[in-house]
Image 1 (spheres, rainbow, N blue to C red):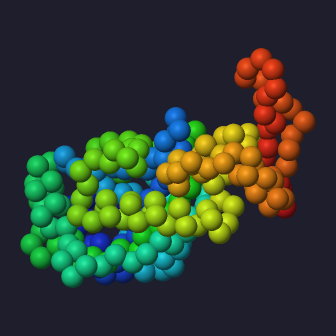
Image 2 (image 1 turned 90 degrees about the vertical axis):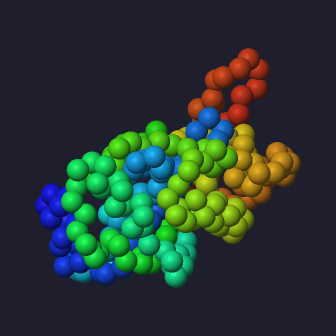
Image 3 (image 1 turned 60 degrees about the horizontal axis):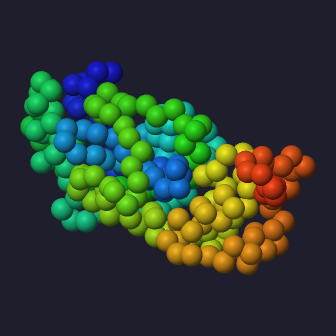
Length: 237
């Protein structure tokens, strides 16, 4: 289906006025980053619509796979965003006209949308980002240097960061942002970046090892002369 047909018939294929948006979180060069897409002169979250024959979770998994090529990533529901004035007509119509698309009067996209937001934790090195029919580019942005974004998408990103801070205090999930093999110093640095605070290294490592979630590998990571940290991986099963 081409874009013009999609504009005309989307309401027949998808649940009306509902969408899913995903804050896809990665970690690179000691920075927490999120994947954003460019449309016009602004950026927005990867998202999509909910098919009439699929669940909300299925729609979110589909969007994540389409945008990153990944399956079975850590994906968690974040929140509902549905301000009374949450509609994108002022963004979509000028952009569509700028690329030569006819914008139908009173079409589905002009109305208020409620979005069901998720966040996903991914290893950036394993992702294969894709742009859609309307996206012009993608980029991994640091959470500390976010660009100008559509409507409430920046608010969604920042809420995802706050939720991640809380979630890592309750469950072991941060390894999803790291390579399959990592050191305790790697994990320690990642937690400091997420929490935006200094953590005692010895106390942190003791706590992580007490979880019995990680398996120490016999191979030593050779980086510098002298003592080198052990490599770990998540225990299987």
